Image (cartoon, rainbow, N blue to C red):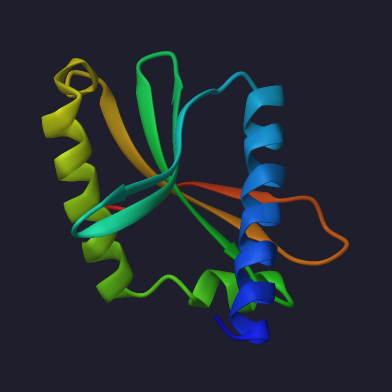
Length: 119
């Protein structure tokens, strides 16, 4: 792995940890982090009440760039990974599913966009 890829990986993991802490402080229970399937990965799976939040974390130099980084192709990959998650953990299938994004930029708290997109 190149140094640039290693740095990006560490930045992503740090951003995820920051988002997990932020979510936990707001009453979310973290069910999974870096949930991998053959068709894609979900950064964070969290639950609060009857809501199951599938959360994509994006860290960029500013919040606008982070928001733009979640394109249609990535959304489809996250949706396929979510379908596999629900097949593997059927107890979660009865919850209200929501796709969120958390945006991270230097010197700013994570920004949580609830219901960032719908399939």
